[in-house]
Length: 316
Ligand SMILES: NC(=O)c1ccc[n+]([C@@H]2O[C@H](COP(=O)([O-])OP(=O)(O)OC[C@H]3O[C@@H](n4cnc5c(N)ncnc54)[C@H](OP(=O)(O)O)[C@@H]3O)[C@@H](O)[C@H]2O)c1
Image (cartoon, rainbow, N blue to C red; front, side, top):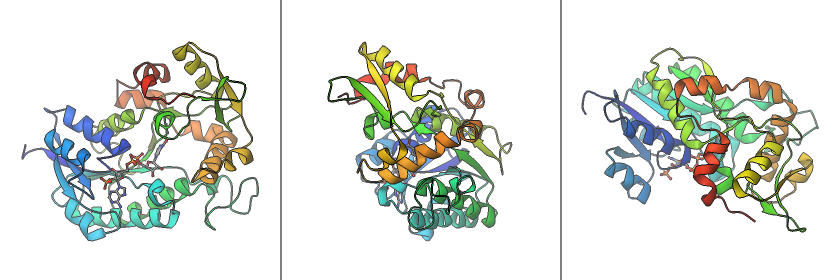
């Protein structure tokens, strides 16, 4: 155990970080070992990681010194921030800065930063096709992560910038799966027109990230994008129809309508879908299924994910 290279995983108790945590644990004979970072080592998820063989340490993204201590002695780190806990782009930027400076002070040799595009490079703040949010973002949970890129670069941290994709688990946890319309027919509702929605099983983001650590320094300083499939809204409806044995429609709604749905963050998610729809070539071009499969030969398709997870998706 002691001769293994430690990878500190931020968010190891959650969906995305949990994927890479489990990938490291599953490779018991591999060159890496897991240090799970959490605010609460006494949580059930943290205890389960410890029971599975992880070292579990406490740190908070808001506390740079705690992160530096959590990274001390590690080889690398998987770094993410959780916009949906506080809905603040500025806070996400600050947390990225804390991660970057802590990684530098600990002398980490390989950091993977979970990031997204800066949508303002495609749709500037004065472009009124979509509202500006929080005074300085178009898609706050994208743009703030992209600003975070600069913190890692400025600190001189050897970093791979990992563009992730929409999780299929959003069908489970974010009510983005089929719901019954007033006519009783099931439908999925996204403002995506007929464009592709690059998307992935969250577990596969983790497996791809683990694959990146295994490639050594090949992707340091590079931006790479992972994706499991590129279904359109109609394709997602068809996949659910097939899996359920019942008609599922695709409701293509205007982005303004989606933004008005009223759930927390609906404006940010609406802008996100609109960015993916209106800059579809750029967005899909930044992610590659073939590359993702080269990192993770077990990469799932949407049909495979549905076959394994349909019972977890709330329907109706
Ligand atoms: N949903 C999607 O389709 C999608 C796709 C790509 C990227 N993302 C991004 O993924 C992020 C959310 O990650 P997730 O889906 O894994 O969420 P999650 O399942 O809710 O897990 C959040 C994780 O972040 C950790 N965390 C949050 N705040 C922390 C803090 N202050 N200090 C230390 N750890 C903290 C939590 O650890 P503890 O509670 O144990 O401390 C937990 O492990 C968001 O930024 C989102 O934009 C989402």
